[in-house]
Amino acid sequence: EDKVVQSPLSLVVHEGDTVTLNCSYEVTNFRSLLWYKQEKKAPTFLFMLTSSGIEKKSGRLSSILDKKELFSILNITATQTGDSAVYLCAVSSNTGKLIFGQGTTLQVKP
Amino acid sequence: NAGVTQTPKFRVLKTGQSMTLLCAQDMNHEYMYWYRQDPGMGLRLIHYSVGEGTTAKGEVPDGYNVSRLKKQNFLLGLESAAPSQTSVYFCASKTGTGNQPQHFGDGTRLSIL
Image 1 (cartoon, helix red, strand yellow):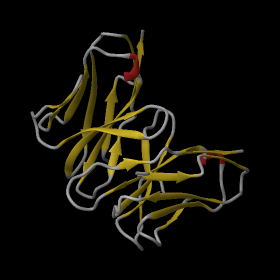
Image 2 (cartoon, chains in turn brown, purple):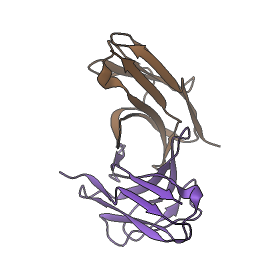
Image 3 (cartoon, one colour):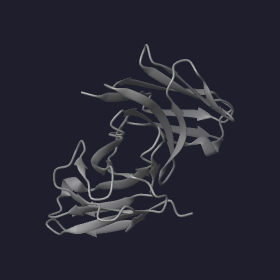
Image 4 (tube, one colour):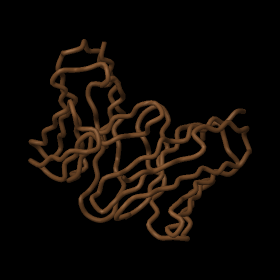
């Protein structure tokens, strides 16, 4: 059975800290891994990774995929209170469907 | 640019009542999806559609039906609501070409009493 597991499930840090969120997966016919940020409403797209070892970066956020070990990490440096959200990891198979992890709830305190 | 629009945003139903959730997208996307999100369980796929007139079951389809009569709309129906269907429902869409991300609506919070 396909599954995606995220860790930790929740995390509390202070502004300026660096955090690392983890996502491991077992999915047949892997096509890509996606990270989404969810505040109060719709999940918003952050990154899509398809190849191993290539880092995707946007400002203070970066992510990397290891297709051999079947995991990805999302790093956030110099965290701000606006980074507080649920971060969702999802894996796409060649059917186009997404399998989501449980999400990591990040709280950044001032 | 509206993107993906879900109606209604909130609804309270009594057990046994029926209702339909509407998802509309203005991006000319071929693929559309319905998910439910429950605490500690992430998003789970209910039904999806790869084009107008087609639908398929996802991970948790029981108790739900869908229809895609027009390319821009994807309807999710509950024929006889049960308390276990209390959840937040998200619709998403994506283009059918290339490896592109899904875009989500703001969700519908549904409570079944």
